[in-house]
Image (cartoon, rainbow, N blue to C red; front, side, top):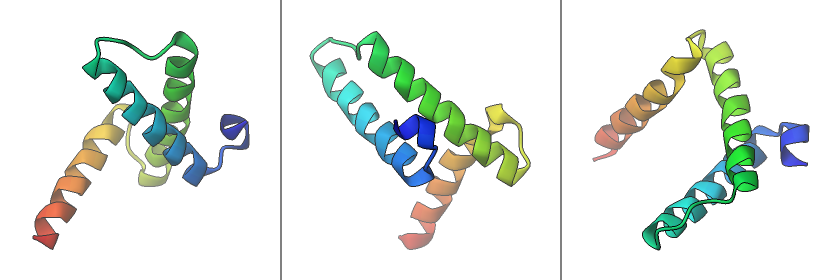
Length: 78
């Protein structure tokens, strides 16, 4: 339902929740089930496509751009 609506805030919350759950599962040697993994990938794809469009960058440049921005912002706040 969240993916169908495409609400950015809800997509970010969904991705964050699934990522944290995936991280917790990995600690016990387990993985997300295929359904959750598929939902997370689809939500990421939608969000990254929007970032790419708005920032006028290629889709494969979105994650490095976000990481670079987060690092830069963290350094500025210290």
